[in-house]
Amino acid sequence: MAAPPGITMPAAVFGEAKPENDADALPRRPVLFHAHAHSQGPLRVVATDLRSLAWHCSLDLDDLQDLQDDVGIGGSCSDLLDYLYSSLSSGQVRIRFPVDQGPGTATAKLVATKAKGLPLITLSLHPVAASELEDAIADFSIALYASYKTTQEHASREQERLSQLMDSLASEREKNEVMQKQLEALSFLDKRKATKQKLVTDQVPSVSGAPPVSDQVIVPVQQQTSVASPSKVPPAKAVKRVAPVPRRARVRGALLQDTEENDDYDS
Image (cartoon, rainbow, N blue to C red):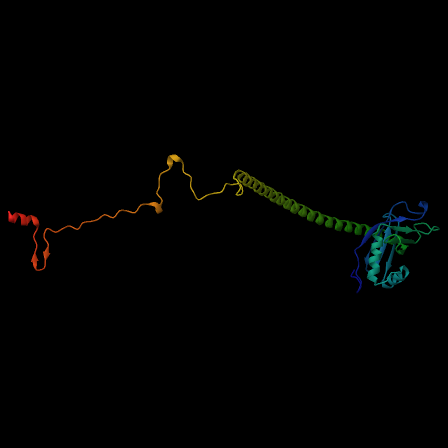
């Protein structure tokens, strides 16, 4: 059934209604209830022991407004339905029968609360006619199975989603382990490199402890050679070059002869 305009219908609710009266005046089988939207109104509630007893009620918009006034909950009808469905889902639902009537012929009241100390929701239930009892129980059973199937499908999807998340988590964990090993390897190499640098530093004397370095180079005695300083090198002696005397010299206007030739001439 489509929800009336302005009203949001919650999902259907199944639960167990525990008795409030004496055990002798109540049915011995557990009583289950089903609250859902129905063609006769926004809310229909059926309670049954799935054997021989069943009760029901249908509420329209006017009934919901009256219930809202009785409970004292403000807001819209959707707010009331939300509170009603939360109360029926709380696990604190009771079924109450009149003391002077038997369960099979008496009206019943379904009492629920969302939490202790909050307003009570009380729904009056009427017995289902004997001619309609089998159909009511059959419809209840079919609806219960449909709800179970829907819940199972949701659980299956959630399980599949959980499996995917676990696979993704395992993959990410494996990646993290690989990265952790890589980081540990890099850290080991850095420590090893730092240790080597420290050993080299310990073996080489520091600048403050090294002896002063001079400009002179100390050479062993066996390898010393006298090297004259450029400033003490004696100047080279000038060699007087005598110009060759020609055997004959020619003078303008006169003829000069060698002495040897003159001596030979005289002799």
